[in-house]
Length: 341
Ligand code: FE
Image 1 (cartoon, protein in one colour):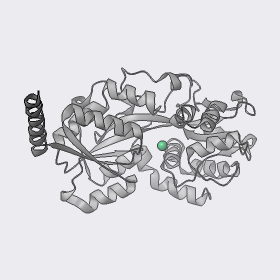
Image 2 (spheres, helix red, strand yellow):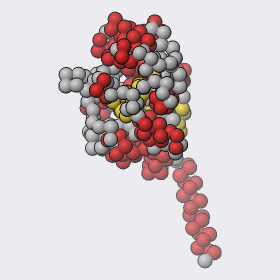
Image 3 (cartoon, rainbow, N blue to C red):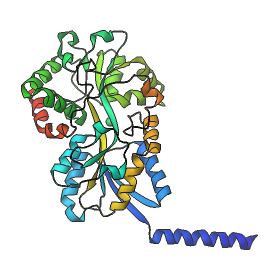
Image 4 (cartoon, helix red, strand yellow):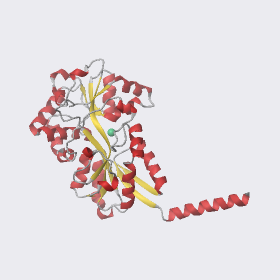
């Protein structure tokens, strides 16, 4: 008995040793900081025998780091929560083109980079959460209508330094031009219920505390609140309804953004990077995301989770998501001009 045990142990030790000698690696620079990513990365590591190293920081910090490291940059992939930042990385010549068909043939067409520099990983809508006790949903219609005097002192939204708001204003700039976007931002500021502060979840909490009646937030935060381990947050999540703006027949649809991945120009572990991109867009990973982070799946074969299905189907704005990067600088200037802090 003891002999067998010793032999088994020796075999295990040897195989561990072998693995560590030629262990494959993948290096990711990521803006995402969610538990779901960690779990999926662990599964990927176990299935592929690849050690994944993740460096987390803001997208701008990661882009700066990639530039500084230059040809010695150890990273293979850049993950952001905003197509605008991937556009920025591509525009600074930090990314290499990806043949999307090598990754998956099932990705939603509207979310594919026409320039081929990034792939979508999940997507989310910037929605209006509202208090059903004080807001009749018939009064809600479009992002444009949020400037209506009807919403005076009733709108909650975070600061303009946030990339989600910058992306939303970039989309309005792309659709309506500078003059309109400035007027929209000015009028929206005069409808704020309070000086912008806190994150998206805090805006929803402020609805329930009756600070305001409607909040501009990313869709998955409603799912995260509703399924939170904190009973107060669950109550907050269940006290608000979700409205998708710009849904009328002739309108363009709700503003969406992606979490996405770019392959770095000098990626040292290119094959492993491709394996990872295939894995993360697979039906397995996409189902895991929609069920746990309440984001929308980018794989056409995967249905949104039960939680987010309850909010209903919606039309998405099919604007080229690179516009969210192209218009970014202008959007930031408009925010400054309109005193959206
Ligand atoms: Fe977020």
